[in-house]
Amino acid sequence: MTAASLTGLRVAILATDGVEEVELVQPRDAVESAGATSTLVSLTHGDIQSFESDVNPAGTYAVDAVVADVSVDDFDALILPGGTTNPDSLRTDSDAVEFVRRFVDSGKPVGVICHGPWTLVEADVVRGRTLTSYPSIRTDIRNAGGTVVDEEVVIDGNLISSRNPDDLPAFNSALVDQFSKAVTVG
Image 1 (cartoon, one colour):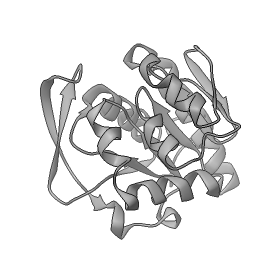
Image 2: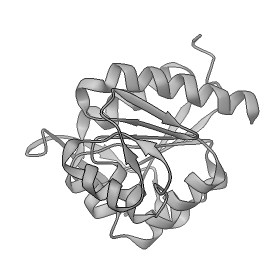
Image 3: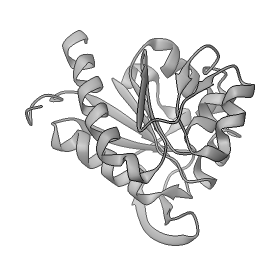
């Protein structure tokens, strides 16, 4: 990919307190390095607290937009980072769940890693889809009608999924590749 391959692409990153820092930062940096602009979308204004390994506080990140105030039409792609607390909070927020549902239904690319699929499960968009995730939520995906495989990256239509931070290099490469197709189409 060239540095300009995502030029003009608008990427939403939906996250809240408890997000796994590397799963927020590394995908964001990958798409921005390829030319995209990213917007950190959360449940409220202010900053969100990231964590390392779910328990160690890491950096804080300024929220750019509140999910209740944005539309799928504002963006070309979506990233759902993990951490256990982050998607657990997102899946209890009706605006976040509806945003994710509409994004997946739009056909625009959605990258999701680790525990991030919890929000997809709540949005009822994994039925009939194949993805991967952190091992502890695989039963939830299966119970929601999805198929889970244990692979570094799984691409099923507009869903790009990975298991954990160890998969970030492959995940980030797949994001840039799949998101670049949105630039071509869009």
